Amino acid sequence: MSRALTFLKTARKFQLGELIPISSHSGKGTRFLRWVLTGPRSRKNAGKSAEASVGASIESNGASAGDASAALADAPRAERLRLALQELGPVSIKFGQLLSTRRDLLPDDVADELSLLQDKVAPFDYDQATSAIEHELGKPVDQLFDEFDVTPLAAASVAQVHSVTLPDGESAVIKVLRPGIEKQIAADIRLLKRLAKIINSLSDDLKRLRLPEVVEDYEATITAELDLRHEAANASLLKRNTSKRKLVYVPTVFWDYSSPRIMVSERISGIPIGDIPALNEAGVNMKVLAERGVEIFFSQVFDDCFFHADMHPGNIFVDATHPEEPTYIAIDCAIVGQLSREDQYYVARNLLAILQRNYRLVAELHIESGWVPAATRVQDFESTIRMLCEPIFDRPLHEISLGHMLVNLFRAASSFDMRVQPQLVLLQKTLLNIEGLGRQLYPELNLWETAKPFLEDWLKRQYSPMNVVRQLQRDAPAFVHHASQLPEVIPQFLANQRKGLKEEQPQQKASSLNSVLIGAGFATVAISVIALPELPAIALFGLALAAGGLLLQRS
Image 1 (cartoon, rainbow, N blue to C red):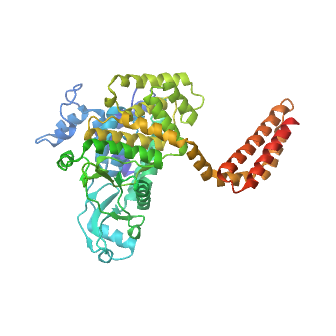
Image 2 (image 1 turned 180 degrees about the vertical axis):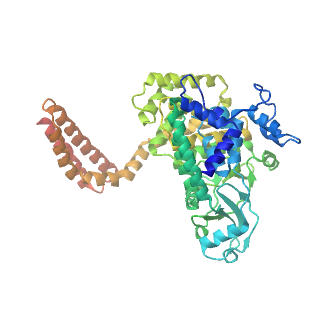
Image 3 (image 1 turned 30 degrees about the horizontal axis):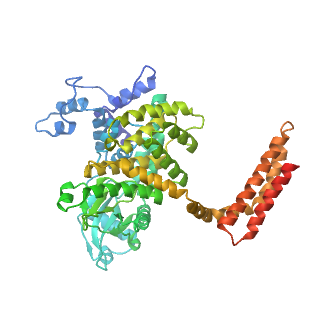
């Protein structure tokens, strides 16, 4: 209850009710909620925009409470929302950061402002950190580590990091969950769910925000972060996937020192990727560095099906040992994205279709993939995509953002009832981060020149004869397993067919069964010949199935 009251006071202080849209169709509930979250206004210079930011107005010497209140009232809506989330604390900051990735739902000004939220909070006591470590690992800190730095390297909303030295002399860092964070997050999520449910029920306009789904996505993300074994496992897999390409280095996890609330990993040394002067001083080839970032993204997404989804500047360092061939160093693998083979295919085809300005194909792929309802009219969807994307192509190619193009595509799809696809949201967010970072390093970066050949080559490799054979070999055991169950399944299928057979359509039902048998038979033969030549009995079984289907068809 106290948390709800704190939220209400903060919402009224920052006039958050004005973020709720009002139209002639808005009901009393929407208007009442807007009033509750806004409260009485005391504005100075109403109607005039503030010339200075709210933070500067409040912190300036001699600013009175009235001046600060007026500055708050005059500040842009997005800035007020960001300041409110900062005041509500670290868990709300985390939610705001996640919300900033939903550019398919939010206006650009709100998404841009929320992306400025910094997950930095005051560290908790050294004694609490050592107590947690000793409880998790079962030994005193001085027996576990040769050295333990009592001053944290970093402190965030969920955990903080200390430097340590392992008994073998290896430099490492230890990440410790914040005491009591689980209860605080649980309380905030309960409140967010209630608010989302209320707002979602007020009007169709507010329902389009899909706040309950956004909160569910946040709950899944933050819950995974509360067990550091998830992050450790993510880091281990990313390291294994990327070790051969040598474009990015992921620190080693020391599993003997890790648990649900503790994670120990190798300490890295590098230049923060946002420190442009230091990179220039080290003589780093910025063009290569920017292009390698794009290559890392596409190779993780399409070759590995597993990508680091939190690639903001605070999580990336550069090894400048070889300035002409710089290497990325990626830390904090708590948030990762995964694509199924089907998603990979549709994302690659969609991106290529956008590059070719083939909006009809983009619309058809969205429907074919199931991202939007099957009943969607292709021509209407195509027209909406063209309306949003075509004006962007008036610019020179190197100025066009592929990430923002993807955002426009998702916005178009959301108006056609595209359901939330968490993996695609993470993909969009990561692409925007990589693209923005690349152009900060090398303003002339042309993502289109890098992306198009990669996607074309990936599709060729994916569906080359050799790769098809490899996929058949990989899936053959599962197919054989299911094929071996056909003698049990077919009688059941026949019984169901007889039971539901209609007198006016006997030929149609029989034809359906024949097709199933013939198709399954020939598929079994093909897979056996290609993937399992050492088991001729399976090919014979497939021939028998196909023959049975053909005999039934003749009779």
